[in-house]
Length: 294
Length: 164
Image (cartoon, rainbow over all chains, first blue to last red; front, side):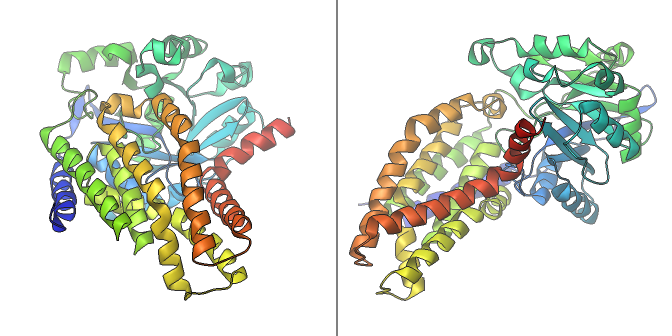
């Protein structure tokens, strides 16, 4: 017979190990070519009516954990949770939070970042982009799969500021999704001069900032980030580490090295993670089995 | 207590899927994020309780009802274990494997938990309409939870298809 306390102790040990491994890491600021290089995730979802798994304040803490300097909270067709996240981050001195929205229509998905109020989805992509610009934000084509190309007509392409070139779906082996997603996004981006954007489309599965944008900003501020995107001063790493973005900045980043050191590990887990997993699963199984017997 | 246990397991699943480990920060955040699940369950149970003969005080009846969540707890644990098989990259990629897991298992868990709850309504409430109670509880609980979680994401798609 296993003593009654064992499952609970296993869960506690799992949480201690996991919490220790979860401690925030500190990164020195990076300056290249006179610009501050900022790691930004432009596409995240919270659990407050945006089918994510973390609260807006949870996103702020997770962004800090993942070494992001800034991120946009982009709920589907609303901005309420982004305002909550922005306020919380300012209170705790967290990363810069851009108020954002994923403007969703059957014909297109559009990221608005740096806006102030919700942009209506009941309009064309070009109309939505104009509204984003009126509010001082930038407009980015979200995961531009072929089904959304029709929505991004010529007027929309002329107005767009950027396009997601790295999204978790490009990192999936081709046989899983049965298409070369990276190539699809490259083809879309070739339709207009656009800033290269990497976003994790984070819903709570896997690490936030798995795909991210390195923004070469004049200033460490929301305005600095938005201006850099408008000027296409971005570098993004896609599948197999291929770099996209401003060629001069790509070269500068390659010469300097170390740009990707703060990215979350893609292929490995640490030993503390494994302790936490195994102890946690065994402990939880014991707790569940015990409580069903009671 | 049973509803807290249920919520704690939810928090553990969120922590596991987000980071591949259990941490206080992510468990607590997952518990807040998914508090709507037991909340809708409780609301649905309260509706059924009002119509039933009420052999137990509400608090005790609800606790016993939540104790019947065993099938879902085991399912959530399997869900968390699935994450251990994946690299961070695979976990963050479009959730094909996860969807396959849900499709392959959810019908069985729904049926198993429905049977457990049917027995609860039949044996504890001694209700002549146990099946009706079960359907009512499930309709309110599941529909409420799904609309809360996916509603805002889905309705523009529906409206967008109706209004060009």
